[in-house]
Image (cartoon, rainbow, N blue to C red):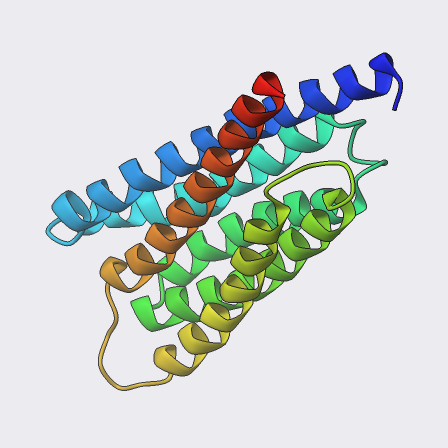
Length: 190
């Protein structure tokens, strides 16, 4: 491997490490806000439920831009558009019921999970920590199915239902970031 290729991969992995830490931090703050404030305030809950897919759209847009743009990263481009669309649909669903919101989150979790899985598979050869993102994408799709089934139940769900999903997302992003950090330390010592 040439020095240029090695430094490009190292620079990209450094970006991914920062990106994954940022995504984990956002999700942790979101979960804390959802459980501490969102369960008591419907206005705060609505804001948090709208901002979550909007954040995912923005994160995918920035990550794709950092890696050649949306045209070179089709799964992230599609994830950007899906998450943007779901942000608008969540706004509409909030006027209906939390069951509708949970069903929309279910659809979004399925699509975004499969697209995250696709991006991780694409990055597998050039970046570390992608096995965690593959697990995360698969778990997201399964959680989406569960959300849709749960939304059909007579009991009205709350933001706490989504907080567990966001917490698992934070865990996966944090594990990926730590995995890349440990890999960088090992590579530096070698």
